[in-house]
Image (tube, rainbow, N blue to C red):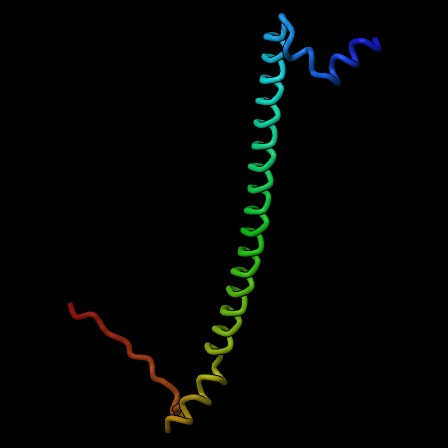
Length: 105
């Protein structure tokens, strides 16, 4: 046990006669570690993108609600009357008359 630990610390397992299988194992482990790190970075990037898009959706939704409430205020009859008074127009005091069209035979 003590001898194998010294071989690992000295690095003799990398230069011995059967070191090819050790190098292959190290290369496979290194490749897997690189793939794992790349996958982790990709997942983190996607999480940040999702969070950014959620914030953007919230902002768009609040802008939509704000615009809709402003539109409702602009469509109110009292607002329309006040804007028309500024332009010199006033609502009619004579009620509208219904026009009936008779069909001719």
